[in-house]
Every structure is written in C-alpha cells, then in structure tokens.
Image (cartoon, rainbow, N blue to C red; front, side, top):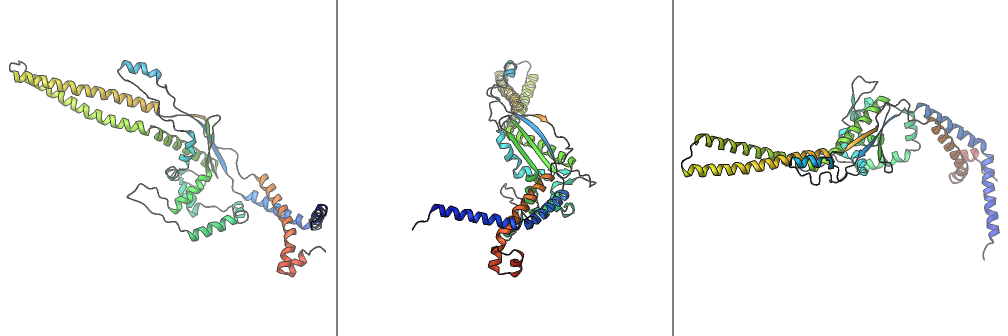
Length: 377
C-alpha cells in the first residue's frame, strides 16, 4: 500500500513547524549561548598575539635563446665560438615553492639569527620556536586549540603514542635528517613563510609573519636572499661544473706549456751554433712539442673564457619590484572577523543544544537535563 505524497509533505511541514516552535520557545537560551560565545570571541580578539607580515615582490628573468647575440661578434673576433650559450634549461618558477619548503632550505633558514625588541641579542629561529624561555602564552591560541582545534590535538597525541619518530644521522649515505626540535621548527616556519606565484603576470610574492614588525622584515629579507642563491646554484650547477673542469685543465696545460717553453729556450741558449744533425733534430722535436702544447693551452684559454661567459649568461636575474619594508600595521588578529565568527558559532551551538539535549535527556534519563530542557508535549 503506497502513501500519498500530499500526506508526506504535510508531515514534513508539521515537523518543520514543530522545530521552529521549539527554537522560538527556547530563544532566550539560544540568545544566552550566543552572547556567551560573542563575549568569548571579544576576549580572544583582544588577547590574541599580534602578527605582522612583511612582503616583497620579485620578477625572475628567465633566459631565452639568442641572449648572447650581442656578444657573439666580439667573441668571434677573439676566436671564441659561443655556440649554444644561453640555450640551457630554464628553471621553472613553479619549482620555487618546492625549493622554499625543502629540508636543506628550512634547516639553513632556522639557523638565522633574528633581532627582537625584547631581547638584547639576536635569537636563532630554531631557539625561538623550540626553547621554553621564548614561548609566550596566547589566550586566543589556547582557546582555539582546545575548542575548534581539539580534534586535531587528540589525533596528534594518538599519533605520537603510536608512532615514535626515530631521528639519527647517516654517515654512509647523503640523507637529510631532522631532530625533533628541527621538525617542530620546520612545521612552524612553513606556516610563517609563504610564497605566492602569479603565473599570469609572472611575479612572485614572498611573505613572512612574525610577532614584531622588524623581525618579520628580517625574516622576509633572509628568505628572499636565500631563495635567489638557491635558484642561482640550481641553474648554474652544470655550467659551473664545466667551468671548474676547464679551469683545472687550463692550469695543467699552462704549466706544461711554460715548462716546454723554458726547455726550448734553455736548449737554444746552449746550442746557438747548431752543427750536428742530432742537435737540429732535437730542436725540431722541441719546437713541435712547444707548438703542440701552445695549441692546447691556447684552445683551453678560449674554452675557459667561453665557460666564464656561459656562467654569467646562465646566472638568473631577479628584478625586485617591491623590496622588503617594515610593516606598520598588524596582519592578525582580525578582531572584527573573530567576533563575528564566534557570534555565529554561538548561535549554531545554541540551536544545536536545543535540538539535541532533549534526546540526550531521554537516553540518559537525567532529571537535571529534563528539568533544564523539558520536551515539548
């Protein structure tokens, strides 16, 4: 036997009306919960730690083919063939965030000393985030941690009990390791330092957040400098290795050439009046060897200059559009937004309690709950 759809719609309308009536009857209770949460939001907004954010904007200049066209003419006059200089692989800006959040980058960054106003000496970021003497109590963080973030705290505690991390050092293999303090500091730094890549306009924005404006500017400037150095090292790694090889071969060829030159000069000084065929043959052999070593030395000198030009041309150029400046206004907390969020949270919490507490009272048969929120008859 099928039910009439009109009857189902009527029942749903009746249930909805009953829910609205129940909420209206308990409107004072909902209002109280909302006011309490709003007051809590005001406290959180007032006592939350201030955060300042320093930013800088850079534009990476990527290399293109034919970039050495202006130098090719001059180089050809010197007998140097630039060939495919400037046609190397271009490091995509999409890789920059990977470099920023890599373990070697973060480990070097956490060793950076930052000058804070309240401390006489600069403090390493690793000590600042892990040493108890530098930790400050924040009411906003505490309330957020044990309310909205409580599930995360519980899950983190369970994971730490189940999986105890093992930290050590590998002397045989080049493996990066992190201590417990370094891992915690790395997690915090990844939250404090961010990078935004604008692919459409081709610029990168680096932002660093700290509780003091000068400290934020110092951190942003350090990240910018390190990032440029890391990108440069990645980009010129191949051509720099080639330059080092050519320079080493050049020095060897130069020494051989100079030794042969001195040997030939000494022979000619000792045999100015050549009479015997043996002396003439020896002089011819020395001349041939001298010519050979000079040719190798001259060719390596050209390759050395070519490798130097290649390193300079391959080195990426960064244009600083917006340099790092000390922020004058805080970026957090957004006090108005916090108050509004807690107010809405209180309203939803009050409605949720009104709808769920009667059920809890029925299941638990707690007289106190039944008296506090009696069910509608």
